[in-house]
Image (cartoon, rainbow, N blue to C red):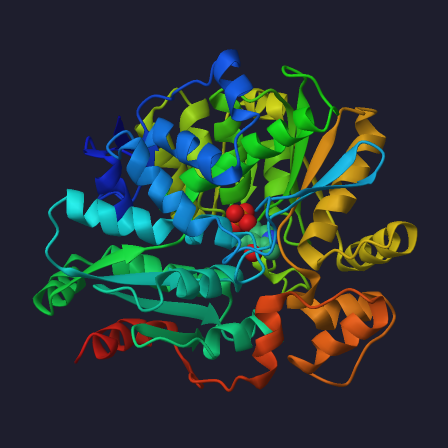
Length: 496
Ligand SMILES: *Cc1c(COP(=O)(O)O)cnc(C)c1O
């Protein structure tokens, strides 16, 4: 299987090339030239598989350069009870009626990013070998909070790899910040950057598109790669849990094979929900994908009107991992729905960088709306959703999952669609203690890790194992840099 760019270039690469390179030379994102399909018979077989086996199978559909045994080795090393606190890896909780929560935060950093970043280092290392790359790798990550820590955990102390994480100085929660700045490992570097997530992400993108800088890094013996969801190696492991949760519903007797279900996904960079779309493309029976946004509702507006317009205020919210105005992975969806015509996508993206907006034609919008619904949630409503879920069901959700829960409720009310629905739960509430406590009417003067105890004492819910040890950790990285200083920071980290 070959991968092509979503833009003009005619570059075609194998999976290993897409994973090592991250971004295509023309600035576009790599997408599979064609898609595999899971037959009904195969789905019947997947229903009985444990997570690691199912995910190896699903990844194998896209990564045909890797043998089934290689992939099984990777997924066994990633999805086990040493790394995950749930035997099921991605358990499904029934809370109310025919609404389920797919809990993707039982991994080492308590956010769904672990689902991909526990396995991605294996994919990257093997891809480097397959492409004959002799350089060491420097993985650059722009993070709105959760990717950074998950990537640090995934890549920490792996030979031949260095990892640098940049996060927006005032854009992450206390627990997220401490998780990153206290990361151990000799091959890691963490820096706060002035501005918001888009500024940080732009800084990283600028580094990747600077050929001269790439050459300089090359002279130092390094090769730059990314672990953001623009990298195919991040997306492909995420497709698996949609299929797994569907199989789980069959096993629980909730649905029959072939029944269509809804997924509601709290969305930022459009990576997670795009993985759901790919699951749909390869045959998972999905009725609607509900894209949930916080107050930064640029995607809701787009999905309703076909106009993507980032000329608007940027809000810092209590669901910081969704504070994004440029959702990079939307480009991949548009590519599929625009007849795989890179010139069209290129014109949208030029328009986005020149005028801050683009408009898709009615025909494309219709196709989008056939499958996608959308909703957004104010700060007030996010807090109300947390309280509502806690009071009615004694189930504690984080601020991002709360956004999805609210969008799901609104969608049901408006559409009268009562199909079985899965809300994708993306983080442990303990990562966002300040906001969760405040929502519950228990604001606390403490900060950082001490708040986890307060939340646990108040709710009786225990702190996830990986977060408990945070209380005793001291930050290794402090201070902040400007966007213009990011390149210098990279060079310094790589030895001058
Ligand atoms: C990253 C993240 C999101 C957004 O996911 P995308 O793939 O960027 O759309 C939502 N919730 C949490 C907790 C996250 O960490």
